[in-house]
Length: 189
Image (cartoon, rainbow, N blue to C red; front, side, top):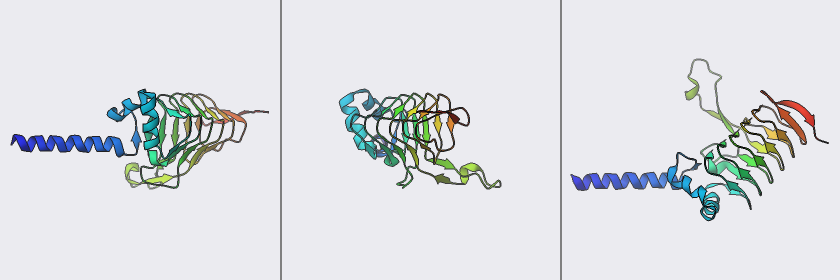
């Protein structure tokens, strides 16, 4: 009986470790792998292993959650601050989250490329499946604290999304937006 319990325990620990190391997720709930983000040499190795592509001099700080790491592309010189959430498809998909070079991502920013379907009122939303749309943040953009970028949105080059904004539509290049929903505040000359 004791040998059987030991075997079950070893199998469960092995499965748990395999899930943490190989599932397309990063986050504090993946506690063993989450600690790798605290140490720069391990962080670089771990990010390159988990993220579909992450460029030079880019890093994901501790307490960032990424679902669907296989559908996230991060360019050069990007720092993803604590509390950020990227939500992409867990299965391989052509609808990705793409963060181009030199993007600033403040704390608690949420970026989505997947959302629930909700058109059939006779079926609970949780049972209606998902829809996927590629989300892009172009080179040099700045996403302010607590901003939300919804599926299918493109944030333009060198644009600024104000803190606490919800971006539902594309943001043109060189534009400052803010609010819920985000509206154009000014164009940068």
